[in-house]
Image (cartoon, rainbow, N blue to C red; front, side, top):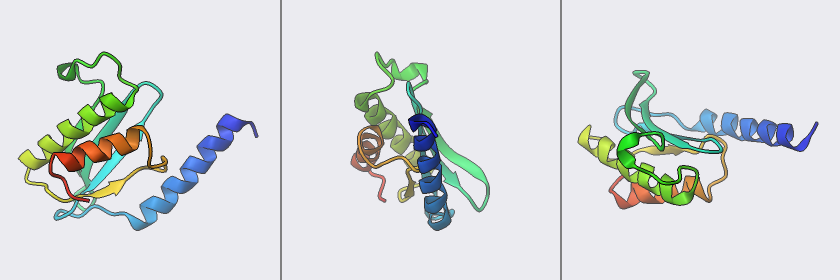
Amino acid sequence: MDKSKHKVVRRTRRHIGIRKRVEGHPSRPRLAVYKSLNHIYAQVIDDLAGRTVAAASSLETELKLEKTGNSAAAAVVGALLAKRAKEKGVSSVVFDRAGFKFHGRVKALADAARKEGLTF
């Protein structure tokens, strides 16, 4: 198995382990993060109802990001997501990092969301 396939397999395993433990409820929905090479996506999900409460990504034109695949862009997305979640009445979430290690862009998004008032 080459190195890139092995990295995907390891992340998938971590993701499965995390999803066994993390579940979003109406009182405390799940903040799910996904990052690709060029963009970062985040959404607040109520798993019991099966619906997305709020979402944000680096693809949105209103953010006017110069670069979309860096920590600064992730922080902007995290702040926007927190504002949208607060508008919907969500103040507390559980964090689902989707198997990604908690550093770099994932950490920047989480810190920005905390700074805007989300607790997790």
